[in-house]
Image (cartoon, rainbow, N blue to C red; front, side):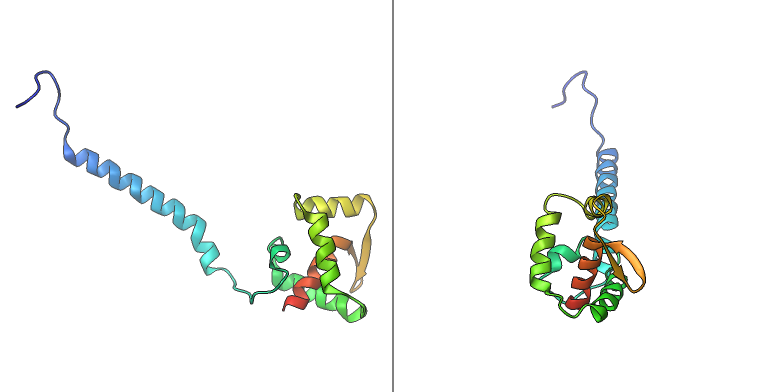
Length: 128
């Protein structure tokens, strides 16, 4: 039984199209997930929600360690609480811009840096 006037659908072009679509989806997912899977792994810490905002956690930890060597009375828990409040709903860049506008700066190892950035680096040093 065939329908008169209706072109038959060839299976091969449909299958080729579906395979191409599946391959494209696989490639897109791989491009998004592979860097995360192959990226550096860190031990869990209570500050992970804040440390994820750092683009380079190792360098930040080195800067934080240098600052902590000079500042002996650093309380990581209260600093984390303050950072969570100041970073709620905004990016690290916005918080740094706010620090610069309000001239909230800290000297760390001879550098004058925004307070939010240095505090976040200190938490990275504490987290290890």
